Image (cartoon, rainbow, N blue to C red; front, side, top):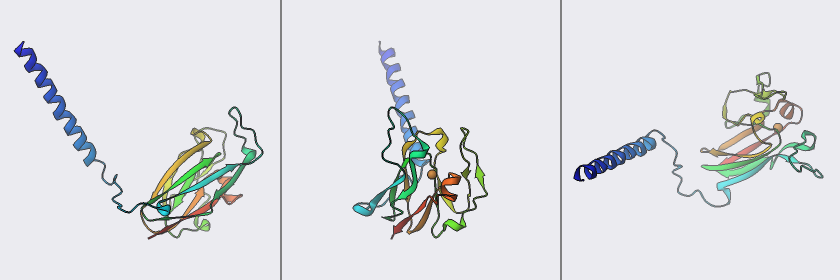
Length: 181
Ligand SMILES: [Cu+2]
């Protein structure tokens, strides 16, 4: 009886040590997850950008996402937040978010660099890595309505484009995130 009890105690102790090691290691191996921003509050702590919009009238029931009924624009065109804040990109339609570093202009994007979406047939996606700080999910693998939340640590003016080739090149689907100090 005592021997069984000792065995159980031993097993619990081993488990506790293992779990402690796991949590300590997990915390140490992921630096920077905490934002360390004490005053991230108020109206400029985040902004919402509609990244593509469904036209009206349209009937999407029960599960239809007609490409011909989708606006290709960012609303608002310029979103303003403060440093350390976030932008909630609400994506409606077939779109791919690409964020470029402070000062990049639409003319700076090399549209000859593209990558095919994973699921075909779909238009190519612009893939210019120069000064790109965020590239979103491959839309060919995603539902047509979703959200991507992007953090902006430093002040600046960040270009945000839709990587879907005809959306950027033909429809000029882009906007900016203005990040205040
Ligand atoms: Cu698009």
